[in-house]
Length: 264
Length: 161
Image (cartoon, rainbow over all chains, first blue to last red; front, side, top):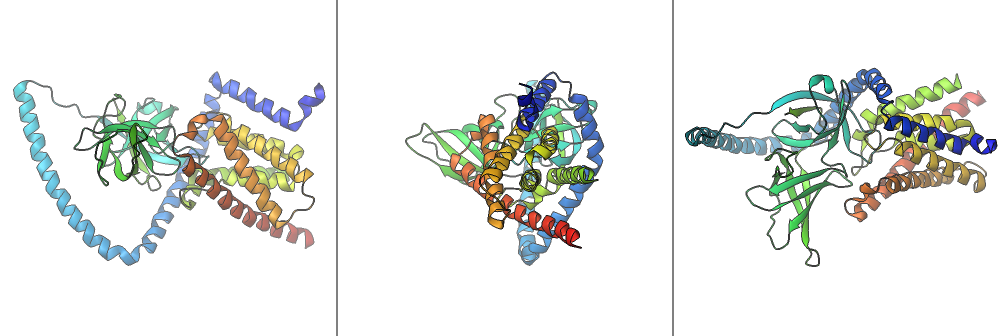
């Protein structure tokens, strides 16, 4: 009997099972905090250097197309400016109308700026570690966005000074979403790669490629109107009760270094 | 000294894994440095001698991962033990194709064990998951061969000098 417990495989499995049990009791939280705190400085710096090097390489590679891209972006920018002016007018009008019918003005969310320190150690899950935690007022399931109201994910694990974010591209992530300017609703799931799967779309509805996908706010977890991505491809089969679409996220998760956490 | 060097290498690999490695992704697949190093260590040494490194690195990987605690450690231990067993029973000398084959099997078994333990990762099209695992096997095996020859060159040259 003693021999079995001396076998390296049995011994290592026993150690891991003990660690799992200890972790379930929450006794490893302080160890977790110590490790994260001691490694965060090195991780943050190496992450920033890697990100800058990657951006520089991307810039060198795309230098040929930079002039054409610049022209296109200027054109796109002037279109967006026009839309912003139009939206501001609508916002003003909305405020006046809300006051007239006695509705309270929409509350603005409090945002906390955080830096990405590191990514997940396994390639399977899509998680980020940020440098803000319990001390900064972040709670579990807080929604994380990037500038421009683009949905990034939600906080799934919280430490004193750090939080772990589950990205929307993670295979375990689920977000209620709808196609903008329509009543077509579905469920956004993470796929194996960096694309998203828009599932449970009603059969018989026409879904156009490049349509914007936003949060529907149905579950109450994610506020409505956060931009998720654009429809890339629609997979429709009459044999199935719902349609599926592939969605390209608007956030470039490989280049993300600053995020905002929405505080309720 | 040797133990210190091994731990230092693995800790450096862990920091690189959580910061830099994701920028080296090919078709959205990043190499798994820790897995590659563990598999090479088991191929070059004996699992009996290095089991504690596997447990320690599995524990660190679990600490830095959002996956349920323990699943990475268990996958790492089981896949490295399988590779050690295959290495002892099937192969007698360390050759180029043997390293590729063993690392490939190691990466495949690591992923399969991980998937079996976390069924929810099956979400999404099964075909793209299969393609992803195939790319991961090829990419990790390629990097393993590079690291293997670098280790061989450094340590064999030192031994011959």
